[in-house]
Image 1 (tube, rainbow, N blue to C red):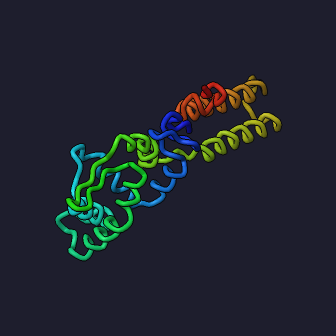
Image 2 (cartoon, rainbow, N blue to C red; image 1 turned 90 degrees about the vertical axis):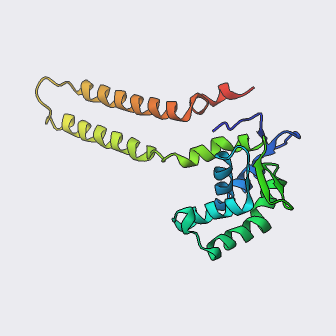
Image 3 (cartoon, rainbow, N blue to C red; image 1 turned 180 degrees about the vertical axis):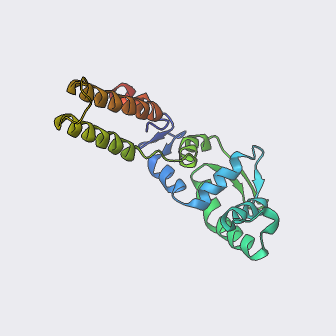
Amino acid sequence: MAAHPQLVSDEPKPDQLTKDTVFSVLSNQRRRQVLRHLRDEPEGSNIRELSRQIAAWENDVPIEGVTYKQRKRVYTSLHQTHLPKLADARVIDYNRDRGTVKLTEHAATLEEFLTASDAPAVPWPGIYLAVAAAGLVGTLLAAGDFLPPGVPDVAVAGSLAVAVAVVAGIHGYVLGPESVFPEFDRE
């Protein structure tokens, strides 16, 4: 995945995030939840609202059903660990005195990763395995003369080639052209 090469680098410029920073920020579910909540709040949020929302998600209850203990546990972890880490990574502006939190322009770098993790994963290995199994069955049927008369063996081979090409084409389209031809993605 060519994730914003101009914004993520191993040797960053002042306006870039390092790959290590991106991986570190996104390695924790609570930090991802902070970013998720703030994506929906363009004006920002305060730590109390943020901790209530995250506690609701973690406990699978509506915001109104969050207990003081659940909210306090999240609040403490956000205040002491996660918000400072996100602020150090320059992904959020965190005002400890006011308890306010807002995304910075660097948060856009993480958007591709956050939306990708929200999408259901396509089981590509299983799809390729199913195509291969169908091809094997077709080949065995052709080899054992179990196909209807008039169906040439080359039709089985051609069908398999078309099936593999279609699945690979769809897979490549989903991943993007830079995954199919990575040498063209270089600048």
